[in-house]
Image (tube, rainbow, N blue to C red; front, top):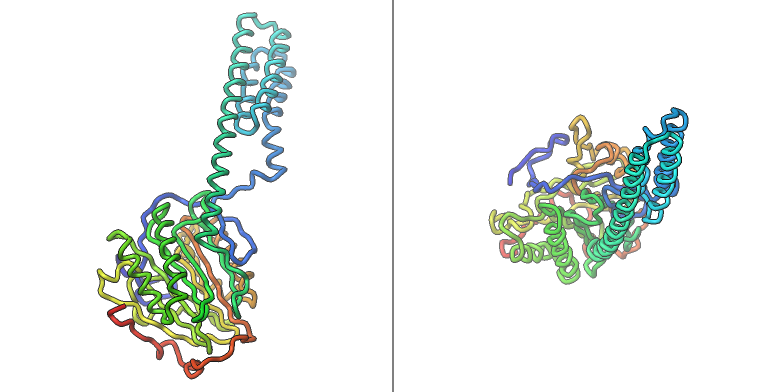
Length: 419
């Protein structure tokens, strides 16, 4: 663990997440839905035009070889190249398609072998090779199809896990507008080490955005643990610090000594009062009109799972959150994304450029620009959650109205040691 200073915004030192590298990522697909989880490495090979081109390529190759043999007049010389057709068909077609291409290749090979005056022994060897390649290609195609069906089944399970772990967030929750984007860095993944949740509770809207150290299944398991505890505690605990305390205690029992989770837990209790607990995570961005600023923790706290090692406890920040204000929570996969010049993605600058009254439009613009910044290839999970309070407040003002005008710096409460 080490404390670092942000290169772009000259922020005070905060806890930084050091991740274990376990593979590289791939680009995520842009989508317009407010709570979309995007799989990195998604391709468009299933589009009709591309699929038709791939399916027709083996036949085109076979006929191109035949045309070349016909023009050159040395048919027997080009016969071995006919094997390229059924070989490629094994990767793009079903077994029946491979057999059709192979039959055409053998027929053309026989015709040009006779026409070119090839010795019978040589022609028999070439045709036998074409038949063998065709049969082997058919078997390979059958095995590939079986693996694709297994992969499809696995993807359906991953899709179910996605909806169970990272539940879709509607565009409107209570009085708030919400937009979420999550891209898993692992190719073909649906979920990863980043986590988010937003739940309406008797104590107001509560949300969490976090980042688990590491990747792969261990990170997904830890993310599931954090989200499960958060969803229960958010309903049960009136105090936001008690919610964080329950997550901390659960992680202390279940995580290894080197594992931890950075997170921001926030809650809106009413009367323009937004509570934030930052546990070693990147500071949220408060958007007020055209002004965008980072909500730095006044008392930096360690990530969840490390409380017992450091002895430091989280603190509660309260900031004014009125009509038209927006709060953006994100993970370091966004701010630490680099372009080809090794420059970080300037999130604050880009938020100010793309901010609008529709969170889904803002988040979509940020996500698309992030992909363009990195050249279409993400190397870390990236999550964005934008919460906006519309101009019309439909929730009655409660007894907390007295604190509405207080500033963030003046309203910080340190967590007691028993938490």
